[in-house]
Amino acid sequence: MFPLRDTIPSRRKPYVMWAIIVANITIFIYELSLSNGELLLFIYHHGLVPARYTKGHVLLYSRFLIQYNRFDLSPFVTSIFLHGGWMHLIGNMWTLFIFGDNVEDTLGHFRFFVYYMFWGLGASTLQFLISPTSQVPVIGASGAIAGVMGAYLYFFPWSRILTFIPIFFLPFIVEIPAFIFLLIWFFIQFFSGAFSIIGLDFSGVAWWAHVGGFLAGLYMARFFSKKYFED
Image (tube, rainbow, N blue to C red; front, side, top):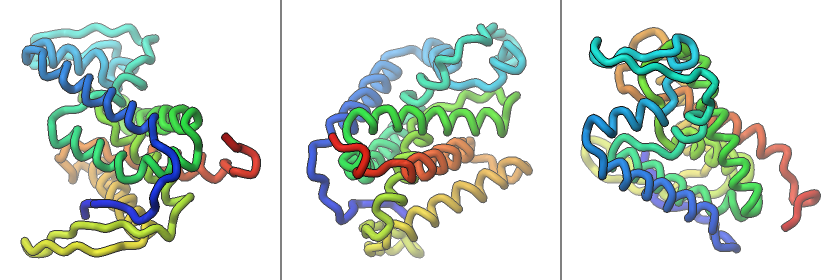
């Protein structure tokens, strides 16, 4: 399933959402300017490598040893703004574009930014707890964006998502209630993550970051009420 748009217009300009998109694109363009070796080191230093906190080092290609400062927690944040390729970036930014404007409209600009960062931290933390000795960098905004999706589910369950569904190579475009679309998406992430734990998934996707971000978004959204928080 691929979301094309939702049916709820936002009342205010989503300035923070656009700023996040611009920041991700800018950083990715910087990544493209690096040589392969420089990019590898950049990702291993600014991506979330769980082994840096449990082992203190990573051995690359059995030849290059990277020593880490275990007390540097910045990768839990910086990893949220890194991407591994054009499709990774475009997929994440498009999903943020679909769901982010309405969530920012509901929360307000400042709270949306704060919540977004918390959702990203929640995503990174769960992925770390699931695979604490992994030497593979966890990068991408998808965990934080999963938080946006979780909040969207809470705020707009009856919205409709215009969705592209390829079935036997035939394109189908249908409107799906948001709660159905998002719950299907969530269970795909959850069961894919479960398969990865038992060694049946080789996609390299940080499924548990998606699960953690989504649950953080759903959990935090329930404490928000316009009755108490008005911009």
